[in-house]
Length: 585
Image 1 (tube, rainbow, N blue to C red):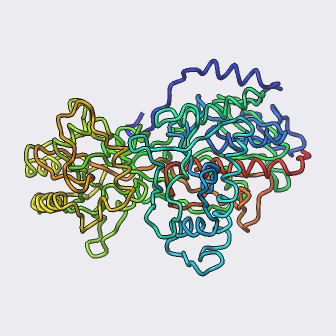
Image 2: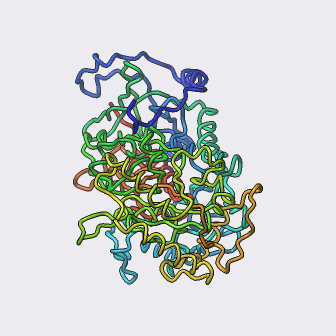
Image 3: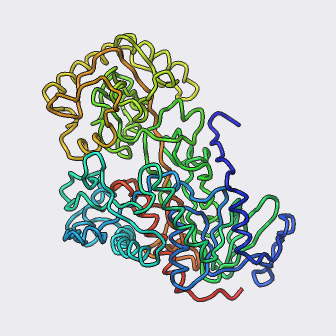
């Protein structure tokens, strides 16, 4: 196994899961791969048959399956990994839904016109034109955002009515507030809090995603809908341009599953396919996605004539570079950077951002190009902090709870010593980061940067990047930077609680661009149908979640933005699929 190969999850519960899947199917027998001859669809031998085949087992695929079954249909989940849940199972389970039932119950009007302006402004900042009927967006992109708004709340109500999963408002427990959106300060955002929900049972950052996926799966299995694990889908079976089933490999056996209504893909992105990442991503050293996120749907859909949408987008986060170089499948990203006596600098020792801005947008700065020097000055960055932040916020990733266990933390009694040690570490990473080196005056500039920041902290104002100005900064700081009980540090006495002067000794981590997962792939329409190269729907083929070109492009609207879109378009796919005529082959 190479150093950057994602490690596979454990096989715990596999026997139990396998027995569950076998018990829910009338298996007709499986052919070997060698027997997979080219044949007309009418002459194929099907191993299983159902109304809707849902590929994947995270939020998108499960939502499609639950919705189809709720409409009176039958569904089979097909998952290539040994455990179900996908990347949803690793997440916090938070689900961002505009105009949701809880907002309306509190008398808050999340007006469609206003909300669409916010979505369009954030997702398409270059195209956004408020006076345009489509807000400056291509009509197809506008319809996708409109479909998200129109169907998100009905999806939540539908899941509740079915008893598949119930939601509640997501509140930031340290401040007892509804979570602010990731662009709460935009003038187009008229309802900046309350769109984030979470599972009512099993909620919380460590259980929520697992609870969400597990509840959807349990609802399906209770109704006899099988979950086929370790089945890697390799091909769509097409009949006169319509998707009528799939072929999958289970070990060395070929399995064919007929879809009387439709095939829905919710298989995740391609963040662990280094070839696709190298071709389409500006930089992605590691991801929180499960190791199965290798972009299978891109080639499968392409072979069926699908048109690709954007492939250069992702749900981004910074990662501890050296950890990601050991294993691309990282446990956590550097989401909301913890600490108050903490800054982020580039190769010139200069701050480049409000360090408290959301992880998706902050990570974009790694890709800034200097046209004069012909370089990416922020290619890797350095999170610099001091003893106060180490002691007060230890345990808030990436700051360690026990400094003895922090293999990737760089130390220095003085800023000059820290700068020397950073330079030495960067040199050792040359084969991974190319010609990226520290500027000759990095040490001096770092000292000047810290001095200026310390002045800002004492004054309570950051004139460079407005750190601590917006509600987002302060509220997410409270949530992600709680002072640990054992800390010897006093509460921050400065006028801006997000900033505190840095005093030695000093520490640093090297951060690189990473992701939760990519979110590019085949293009879909507002009915979640996959489009062909003529922008026409491919009958019987649907997509949702991270495996398709995201309706949000690169915008992360708020906590749960990924799952909200996945559930909603999975729901749309399930509804529309059940309205289709039954395949004849």
